[in-house]
Image (tube, rainbow, N blue to C red; front, side, top):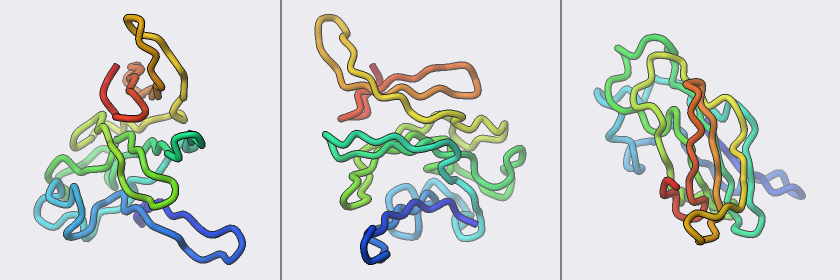
Length: 150
């Protein structure tokens, strides 16, 4: 089962958009799943809760590993968007940016906590930041508008 992320109209229940966490043919990142492994691989869901920035209209997805947490022989390639922090436009579901923490994870290093939104200052510059912890013990901090590491 795939971990696709969807948005629904609260009044009608109609689906507004879907983001394929395992990119389908023709979508950005599909080429990172070699030998057509995107067709039969699952998971890559949002394991912990999402975080949202209502001012920017962005939602931040901490995505888990692909099927076969400790074995990746059946899914060659980098396997986007597994083990990634993904920023989506909440109105359209379009990817704004992403950062893949682990390429082709075979260690089950899921992102174990919701992204933390914070306003920080670096070298005198104010930055809208998002921080993501990992099972490896790292805290990665990004500009939450651009996705650039801080």
